[in-house]
Length: 212
Image 1 (cartoon, rainbow, N blue to C red):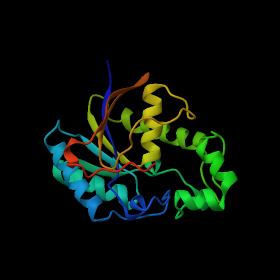
Image 2: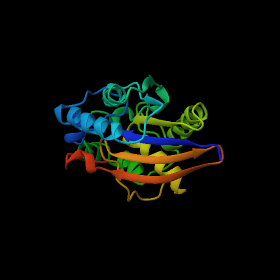
Image 3: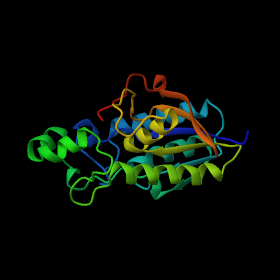
């Protein structure tokens, strides 16, 4: 069977992760904790199977994480805007609590995961995000048939990939982890996406967060 093996990774921690502020397309750097996570991740992937390529979101929190992986493994690093986090419009920069207090109707639509609803101020709907992420996945995986590649992205992107691999709807309650710098494995074929392993955080020595 023609396939592409994938390691999909959420970027390391940022200050906004730690304070539960929505990042979206806002370009927030890794904090010290996140840089440490990226180094531990990179070492874990050096000790695993070789990577043929690393692709990253163009946002710096993902790119810095991917750069650590690429430098450690020797794999070529490329960026792809299709791996960006969901755009959250006016939600960006606000904490979960502030959104619920200041925009309660919008917060309810967000919490219930209405597929065609977009956050005010230019945000993306889940349907738009899903189409972007899965189109990007197909494009990149098709270029690396028979190979092993890493995709370094964001929590919203990984959530879409997990749902696709496990055939869960956009509105299904999330019971899976989306931890910073954890290792998640998928298998892509032109006909399917399969979950191989998820949420491996053994390399992080307890330095993991999942605030989504």
